[in-house]
Length: 256
Image (cartoon, rainbow, N blue to C red; front, side):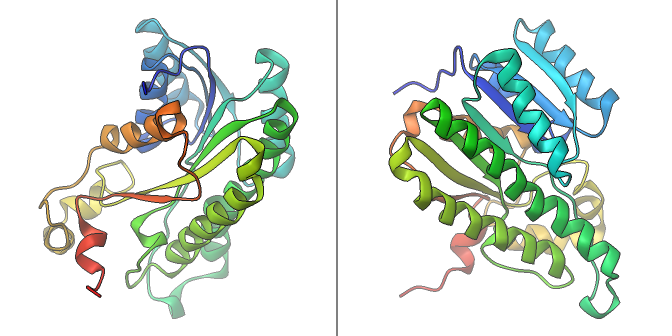
């Protein structure tokens, strides 16, 4: 089957940079009309302009995924303008690190509100619309730390494990309703959020030591997996957490 998304209406949250930006570009390249939803207007409008310059269709909606009313309005607005929502990549996320005993409640709440509550809110309104229209596809951005863990990343790991569990649960709820729900679990990927760690002499060496391929991933490599999961080529795939990580998880999984 082909990965064409011609005529599809696709939403990307956090589509202004990194993996979200790459996914927005890739979905548009495969024929989808892309709604880029994010808080940062200038970066998002640049992505929209890049898509339009390449001959694609895109629009920007300013949005905070941690705010229920904004998410509800986002989905309703897409349906009002385009008639439906065919696929969604719930990508918006953030990271706050440090030892658990030093993390503030404010930082914990920020990470979990964006990374986990934000995905839940998006799915709540996306699923409701997809049930009304008779089907759709949702892809959530989890992480290899939604499968494994790392020190000094308690809030991030907890939120991403939540996303992985949420993905599986909702996939089972709607599997017989022509709605597929999956998650992509990126490994160490070079984005604005990870650049400092990857470029740090000590952290970079530690990270590369965990990667069997001995390199960081590129956002476009994660985006390719998102396109596939949104397409009919993955029509029998639901409830899955797909690691796109250069072999990291395989190296951590014990042999039985």
